[in-house]
Length: 337
Image (cartoon, rainbow, N blue to C red; front, top):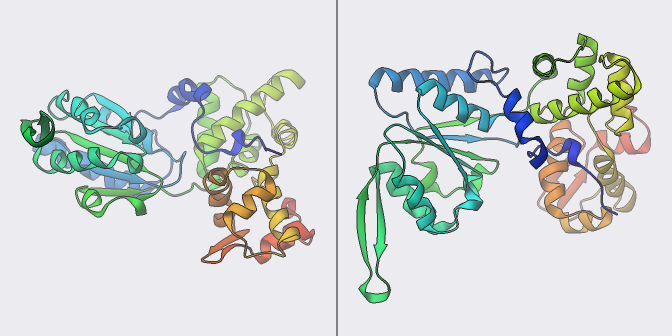
């Protein structure tokens, strides 16, 4: 059996890109949360502007949905330059990257999402481009092939990754600034929900916003997604305004409990506790037990279960914590936590 985890999946869905873009802050003053990251970025940008030079290359790491793309957009806007956007999976060959790099104008910002998934030949070209603002284009084939050096304009690379640990050391070393984004607090998400509701012209009270924020798994993208689902419920079942009763009823309908767990989270914990006596159990075995892909478990389910203290990972496999055991065994009601 496969579970629909779209509501709590922190990655962007194709049908919500336009809405996400409309709700995205356009400057650091509008950006909520991540105070340390904001301070670091603000200093780097002001220093670059004062020097009249391209800003240092930046690596933004952290779980999906926390604002890496938003901060890249803000970086370009604060510098007053265009933003070029691509992604690691889209750069299959070194030539793909060369075409992008040679088209950049002086000082522009190049944003590479999921940079850890960039093909190795392209990464090797990127090392030279970041350090010397030059690319070597191969001309010819076989023994007669020769490298033709091409100068490129100074630029700022902003790389985003959810897996900073897998980046090659030569790439990490070329970033002048590394910014780590962490999960948001409920009060910060509440502000984000209220701001998004205003932009969407929704009537919402603070208790309703808090109810959505508290079930959003520390992730703004999920908070905005849940806000839209509550909006839909309210427009069908009441006058369209969102209060705490509407938020609870809508989120209960979508099986998002007060701790932010959905039915896939509970299924994983239930299998771990009842079928494998709390673990440890291997990832593949656990994924088969709940009928899901291993990538769904590692990218959607585990980050929050580990952070919330329900599950831990070890060299031997996944283990249910005491909190996770209590939840499944009915000793702890998440509504009272």
